[in-house]
Image (cartoon, rainbow, N blue to C red; front, top):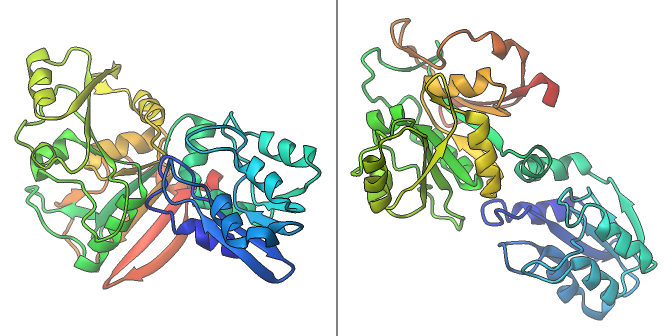
Length: 354
C-alpha cells in the first residue's frame, strides 16, 4: 500500500478534478503490476496495474489507495476490470465518498466473490486527496492560504512598496503548491498593487489552475497581466450591482465574470467556495493581502496556513500578515516545519483538524 501511495503521488499535479490514486497488484511479496491515475479522462490506476500484471493477476491481490469506481464516466468501472482480471482480494485504503461510487465499488467486488479489506493506511490516502474529500463531503474546496513574512510578522514596508520577503528557493517551492491546486485565489487589492500573473512558473506537467479574483466592484483593469497572458482561465467574482459596462469589457478581454451575494459590501466567501466546488475545484491556493486572508480566517474557511518566514525584520510600522485580531491563531497547530533555503516553511492547521 505504501508503494501504491507513492505511485498515486505521481499524479499530484495532473489528476484534477479526479483524485490521485495508485494501485499495486501482488502475490505475496512479489509485485506483478503497478499503475497510477495521471489525468482525468484517461485510464485509472487499476487498469494500468492490471495491464502490467496480465494473466498473473488471476488469484492475486490488488492494493489500491481509493475504492475502485463502479460507474461509467469517461472510463469504464475499475471494479469490473478487477472482477474480469480474476483477482482474489482487494485491499483499499479508503472508500470513495463520490455519490456514484460510495460503497458500490466494494459491493460489486464482494458480489463477485472477491475478498475486500478497507482501512490500510487510510490517513495517508485521505491526506493525499484532502481537496477531493473536502469538495465531495463538505461542498467546498480545501483552502490553503500562502503567506510570507519576516520574523516580526510583516509582509511589506509601510508604504506598500514591493519587496521580496523570501528567497528564490522559497518562491520556487511556493510554485509547487500552486501547481497542486485547482485554483489560485487573490483579491482586487493585490491585483491593483502587484499586477500578478498567478501562474505556475515551473517546468513540470500540470493542469493550469483557474485564477480567481475577488473584485466586488469590478475594478480589475482589462490590461491586467492575468488577462494579457491567456495561459490559464480567469474567473472574477463581483457583486450583483457591479457596473455592467465594466463586466462586458472584462469579458471581452477573456475573463469569466460571476455575480455573487454580498454582505456589508463584500463578496459572500462561503458562496464563492460553493461556486468553486461546483467548478470541481479540489484545492484552493490563496495568495492575497491581509484583508482577504483575514476575512477567510475569521469565517473559519482556512484549512491550512502555508507560511514562509524570512530571517529578517521590517519593524512595527510595516504591513502585518492579517487585519484585526490574531486570536484565532491560538487554536492552530503546527504540523510541519522545515528549512527552505535560508527561510523557514511552516504548515499549520486548525486544532480540530489534527
